[in-house]
Length: 157
Image 1 (cartoon, rainbow, N blue to C red):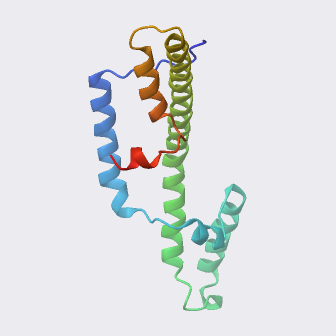
Image 2: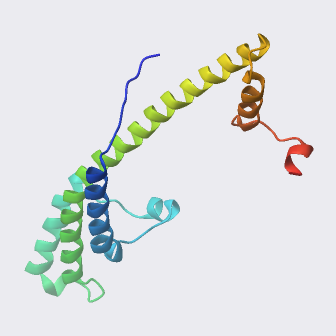
């Protein structure tokens, strides 16, 4: 079996990461908004191509303030644009890190689960051959196997 990942953090590294996450959480979390997937889907999106449009429209709003209705808050729109700029600077490296964390979790989990499936098969074969303790170990693993439905006797425990 090929091992493609071997992720280990020292205690010092783990502490540094947790400290950094605590800073990010304490500084950012109170300022962030959380939307449902439905809410996000319904909102108009500002991407790379629309940034120039937003910037230019705000310039024109300042040039022609008499044309702009009072319900449009230009100062708040400028704050929103600055927010997008600042948050995008944070988002790209954070996204790269979270994608790497997710991929590493997936690969490490796959490797651990594959190894465990092999161990389970070996123990079942050892049990068939009458090896001491193998039957109990295989039965224990079998009862914990993902997706295995529990019998009424097991749920009564």
